[in-house]
Image 1: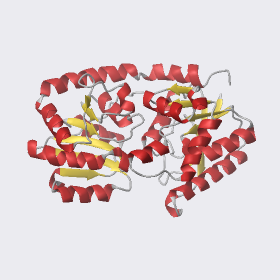
Image 2: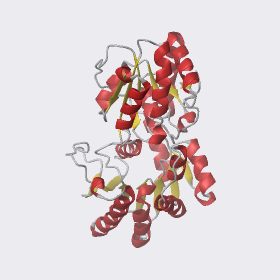
Image 3: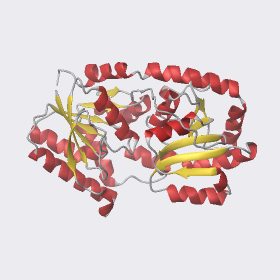
Image 4: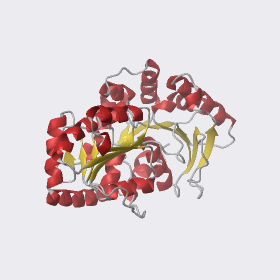
Length: 374
């Protein structure tokens, strides 16, 4: 089976969970499916696909040169249509990796007369609502379009399945939950900070809740005088987080890092006391999954896609990050309770490795998504 994948994020140049999920999917199914990914050309040289697990059709578009993100998406979708129609290969179906490729996916579906599958990593309407903002009308159109036109919809969690059901009864009938596969890491770990610290990472955008985490840490710092906070990621709010840390008077105990590679992430995780994730909107939680796989106790917000695998005080800890004082007291108790953290991290690691076993997820793709019925 030959599948055309449309993706904003190049699987050779990862920046978010959507890209990481796609790369894992491509590698997991490389012996079963032939993938061609139409995506943006990375700004730096890419060596991630040296074994030829997939082909690429790359678009030389720089988002920063466009007037707005929506303008960039419009140009990307136009270029995707143009590049695919010029391509000489034959495809059996189209797979849209998130709704940002909806216009190209739907146009090509009809032009090439191919079935369309989509993976929905999150809904822009819900994401903006969690951040206290309004979604752009253009993005709302993408959301409605992809749900209407997709024969099958893949989501990563029960939370997302319910969200799709509320948006479209038609799409709800075709939803399949396929989580991100866990991968054991074998990278060498290096201690990067000598003092105890909490670690968190993700995109620097409003819905990830890092302002909440900084305010929680201000309260926690008074209860844990030797503790520090390390946050890593990439996005438009990095300077705002640095300003907030100064305003709160905790800048000397907070380290805010740019985007880090897998090996650096593994090192920061390995020596952390806990990993904390305060997101206001999290459709799955790949960072939480990765932390559990690394054997690190996780503290998450009350609601998110992680509810499928973070069981309070069994595989992880649920914390009310909307209340900084209460969250700080909870984290302080956990940091003082070494026995419960050790038990939970051991249970959590074993649970996540079994639940999201790669071979199990490979079978889900082959039996429920890429079936001969297409």
